Length: 291
Image 1 (spheres, one colour):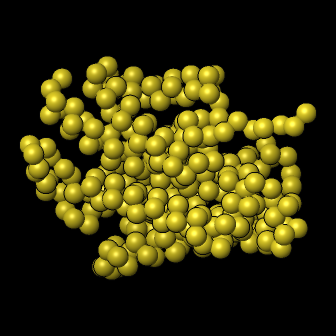
Image 2 (cartoon, rainbow, N blue to C red):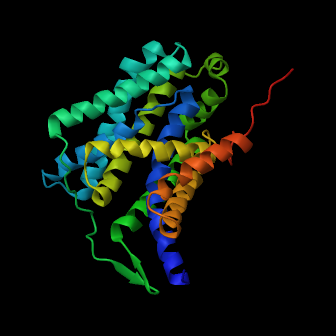
């Protein structure tokens, strides 16, 4: 393998990994705040792609499409949390997980009823003509995906560090009951956590649609997002990003060096090894229990 090819594969892997990172981030945020693992997050990515598809038919400017996709995604997350998750939040964890899985299926089949199974195309905001730099080809859409991922990550990290609501989420993630005693409105924190996560998921759908097309199976990205989240530590924002980029790079290089079929197995092989030898992930911390 030449150096140029290696760099070209790295560019492709980072682009794919950026989407995985956003999906992982969307999974991590509600888990940090409420302890709920949302298996329906993949369908929020699908919904974001279809919302963008509908909005583009109205000839709206791309920034307006982005804003509306994020807003609709956030409102959808609030509605799901308030109507479907909060009533069962005290139920056994397995029950809540199954509920999120069922919510995802409802969203998927509703999309299929409305749009059918046929894929649709969605153009990227910067065209498809490649950019050349130092002998390397850069797809403008891939560059935009990477830049958007960085912007979202920086915004989320700043939110948790400086925003009052972000600090409240961090407190709730540590101990919800103690946070409630300190005057934090835990229910409000959970609602906003779901809104932010589903907004990010919908935004990821908007970003990935020009690359893979718009179809009801986009939600399968959640599998890679879960792998990325586990690799990163499941409660770590930087870990979700590193995990997503790692999965994208591993898939891309293994697909070329071994086979396109094997590349689908590699992330899960790494996941199993990680669960055996470091179950709390690269950036996670083992729970300390007082005895």
